[in-house]
Image 1 (tube, rainbow, N blue to C red):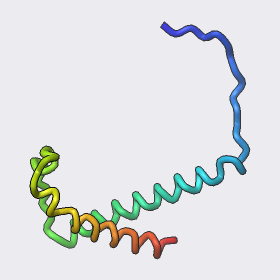
Image 2: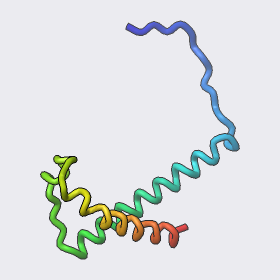
Image 3: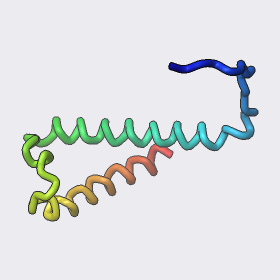
Image 4: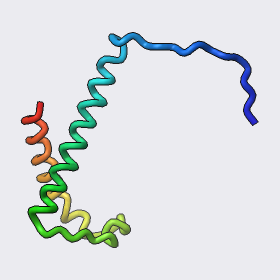
Length: 85
């Protein structure tokens, strides 16, 4: 059970105080959208089959072998982000 003991007026922060946080959130959102778009384009371009069982096992020996590929995909996305900026 929750009881209200007092009512406070809403507090608004000046734009100057939250400008950087808003900018970071928008940049992060842009990066996520660019990454998602890149992944979808790559899925269309190449025959991609997702092995769901692989992701269920965190201790899979294949996980160590896929790390470089993940890094190269990340590098590709980072290059696109730089072009968008």
